[in-house]
Amino acid sequence: MSARPAPARRLTLRDLAAKKAAGEKIVMVTAYDHPSAQIVEAAGVDVVLVGDSAAMTVLGYDSTVPVTIDEMLMLTKAVRRGLERPLLVGDLPFGSYEASDAEAIATARRFVKEAGVDLVKIERGGTSIDRARALVSAGIPVVGHVGLTPQTAASFGGYRAQGRRADAALAVIDDAIALQDAGCTMLVIEAVPSEVTAALMPLLEIPVVGIGAGADADGQVLVFHDLLGIHAGGAARFVRRYADLRTDAIAGVTAYADEVRSGAYPASEHTYAMARGEVGRLEKLLAAR
Ligand code: KIV
Image 1 (tube, rainbow, N blue to C red):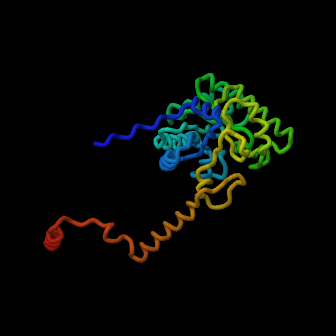
Image 2: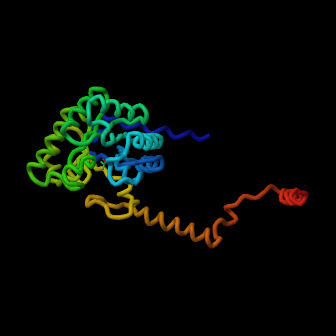
Image 3: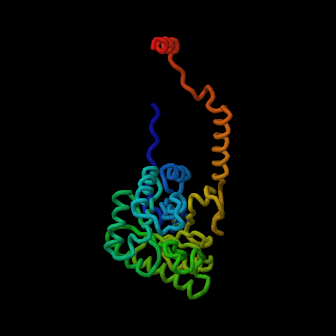
């Protein structure tokens, strides 16, 4: 009897710090369901984020704003069931943590207890710095998110790069430092000029993962649907497409439709047969009716 392979060791927060110390890049990607979790696990990524980008990628909303705690929890639980080794980050949706420390802790606890996340992510500096401190005090590891913060993008003119001017860049850097000081374990920095990331990196000790923030960060994160080309339409400037699954999927479903219409599918190898002699018996039973 062959031995079952040993389960992969689950990464820890210390492993992330060790990667940063060793200058090893951290690979982070989003996933939103059980099959995508199994794919990113098999690809050997380090950190999986069930991002509130799920609002657009899988739920069909126009922005991240409408997605609810319960929708995010359902997706996050499915991802948890598909992961062994990577760290799992749950994204607290807009309106679920900003009002008070108590609200943030109550929401984050649901992600930890019900969906088994290792860390929660919250967006912005400002009041989110207090929320981060409260979450860390309550024993919940936090990922901060600075630069372009999609949940509040409308308040700064939409989805656009942040920190292009020196004073705005300084504000991003100050938020990042304040989030580290509040106890965050990791930071995501989104859509800022590479010079801003380069200026920030020597000022931080915690791992920083970039998305559209240049090559100086400790790692990179991309949205699963963007990097695999699952979407219709264009992607942000910083996305590199590593596959074109939408085209492949449309070709596959079109071929299936053609074969159903022509009768080429199903073929004999796709069909079941009755046990020997049973066809004759069935005919007799039908004739006797
Ligand atoms: O929701 C998300 O997918 C994110 C990443 C873009 C970092 O926040």
